[in-house]
Image (cartoon, rainbow, N blue to C red; front, side, top):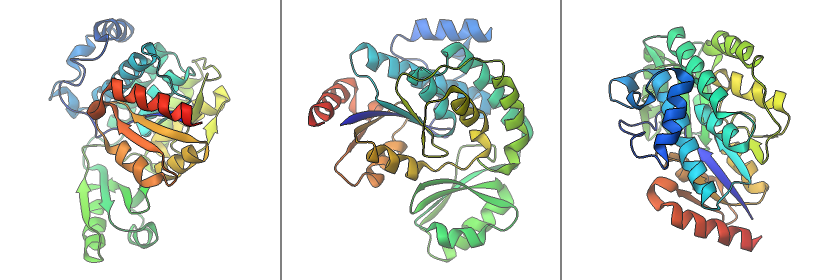
Length: 302
């Protein structure tokens, strides 16, 4: 059986998340030099109000924890990331150099924040099927994420999302929860900034990954560098099909999914998706020792 490293998206961030990274000083010094700023200041409560800071923190955290596992002998057969999490997934897969990822994510966050500076975002709709949600969206709201058969995320203006959320709850949805994301990700509202980022990718050289890179948008494993570049550049404007990605991971014989910090949302989603006995753990909650033991057990089971 194979090991999957998953990397969370925006919304998992919290103040202080860069302060106790494994081998953190080396990575933070490298990131600070590349970006010509002290990245240790990006994880303050004030800084995390900005999309650029959030996305850089998630990139740096994911790379730091995954590399620490690798140094201890636990390596991924497949990597996958939700939205911004695709960037650390590409770095750990060996497709995208960390320095280039820093520059691209810095630009990505700025583009996204400037495109819709206020009054827009994401809302999670829980306990409501996609077939019933779609007719409620109208022309000013979009289905942004399919995380499980009964957990969706919608994108749009605050007013449009409030309307859809209230209607969904009146029809039986368990919750409609505004997420800590200030841009309407994963819909056509971000097509123009995605095009700008795609042009920036033309100046970057990606490599064929050393392990499988699983797209959270298409739910397909991508090996060609140009396909991975396209996936990364455009994922801000494309729907996240995370449930399908986790089903695809299990079909590729994943026996263990390890979620990189921060958070444990992807762990819960993987458990909902896996139907053949595969395990899923949050590294933050379970620790590297357990991750290593479970990874060895999964490989022995193969």
